[in-house]
Image (tube, rainbow over all chains, first blue to last red; front, side, top):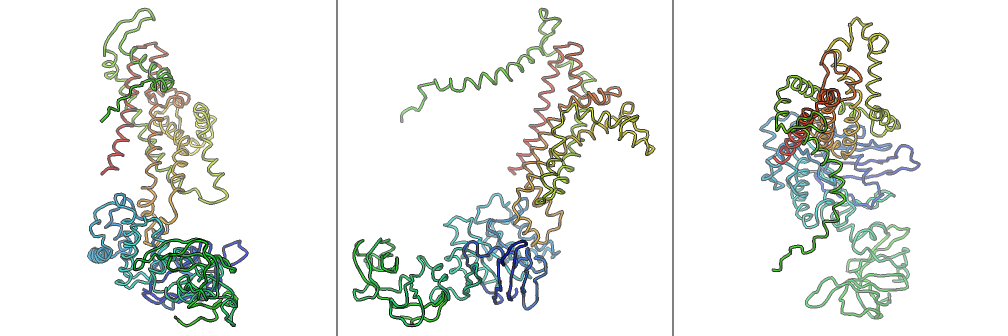
Length: 339
Length: 289
């Protein structure tokens, strides 16, 4: 396993006018579960291909444990990858699939059996050893594909390219749990690429939000959610994303705009943000009181607030904001104390 | 529970056109042949029922048997050459080059040439007196003459068939190869697989479907080969390149032995059916296990 560093990493496709990735700077600790979260077009796949060695950087460096691997092929970097759909050798059994990356490196049969058994126990796929991939379900196949990425003990980095996309929703949770457990037990450095914020925030120890403008923020899921460094992060992460109002609306002097999450506001007749209820979406009940997401029509546009939902559409209410983040020029310049 | 038995059978009229077309195009002609095969036909008004006499005679006819053996050897030979060669050619075609469409068109060209033209081209090309190939080989000191030497005749016919039909296998295999998603190659690269392992573990399993089609097409087609040997060698020298269909034509058209020729046809038809069934069912059985 290795710590990963991107040092002013840039990439431009041949014939393109602009860089797809520009001056990316990122440090990933050895054994860390890191998620790269980005919308489509943010350059996720390009970054993935740079890490796995399919593409070579046109600027900057990629360091594995302070060794420059920018120019090395994927098989020399010892990068394993799990793809969007399970990629297995269909004519080989599950055991042979898991053993294959070790066999090509001429490991002894005893060593192979030891590693395969270890990884299989970790992922709970030992019972599948004798079967052919064709007889497995999609999520079982993907587990085997993950296992195949983990059998080699000298793997520097495991790349996961939206590995849950093809898996049916009910199985996603179980597969993610298996992945998390394996990651923490084996201490593997993993980079999980996804456009799904739930997957990113629940999988990773740290998350990087990638856009066409570069990495906007790297931090723990908590930090990303609680204090987004950029308006886009606040907007992109969370469901729904942050509400934004002009700083003057709350009487905040520094900064241009203020962002607050739907659960950071309370209904308060004396609150500074007034509007009428446009729609209500029920979400749960707490102590018999219906809770929901209320969307208000205000002079700042639509504002969402999570609140008791015993109100009627069309009613005029006002909001008090308990906690907020202040932005200037799209980036964070301050925030209120935690309420 | 109420019975779900259909009470209105008029829907059957809907399939009537298909039944009629199939009847006239396949069933009736085939049954006519079956009918002929159990009769001795002297002329159109004088015929006797002879039962399975012609079948017995055909299966004991040494000329039929040797033509049959030749046929099996021929089909086996061209399959053994065309399938691996076709795959090799397909692997050699660049995937995303500007040249790719030209290569594909070039490969498709032999498939567009009528059988008798192919045979005529080779008939001239291989002639030892004026043909480029024939003269060339003789110039190397090899006394090559497909008209007099049975081995040379065989090599020429096999070479011609390979020239004509390897493209078909190559195009099918190329289509199969391009359908393999790139992550399979990436994964193999990461796993440290060598080229042979990539071929055997990724490409070959994924080419299975198209190769089954290619083998079936070439098997059926080569088993019925007629025009090329007829034009190139006329079945000679001697009977060296007389295959089943040519022997059949000699019987039916040349000698007007309609009864034996019909029995021959039915046997011929059943053999093609049998080979295809044997091949296909063995492939399908392998799938299940």
